[in-house]
Length: 240
Image (cartoon, rainbow, N blue to C red; front, side, top):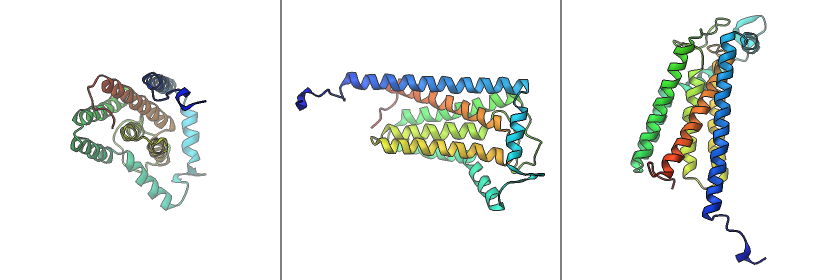
């Protein structure tokens, strides 16, 4: 077959088809994440998650001594360090740094969109916490200080929102599939580690973390969809 007979994989129709498939996949995953959050919330309200939560929480404690997490003191210190990766202060500093970088690159519309998206995620986290008002676990001592309600886990949710959204911003200007996968993989791993640390430290029930991951993924993927729509309409800067 001659080279001229080969299909043009970069033709406008091919690119549009890939765009539509990617959008459909993200919509389906986002809908699944929202469904998972709603299902977890319903089960939590009915009290059906109590046995599951207690089993997992106690599995991370020394048998016969719920006050002592499994692992050495170094593991506990590591978990406290990891949980800080989902704290408001650190996530705000990271977001502010990225927004500043976007402004310096003269992508002011994208910077503004990112700021609104992150602020919206924080508002959603606080509203859902107030709405459910689930008490923190009292089965084991808390490894760090906490002041808000338990469901959903704000650290898990905002880590997912922030790291996934920032990964998407990085992949917009990256042509290498390997690097795109790397950025997204790091975002997912960081989110999983933050959520796991919250359960290990005894400040969240496992279902709180699952709900935080689900709601965070829904918000982050929704941000991705809105960003693509705005970019298509010329409201934010296109990827380079």
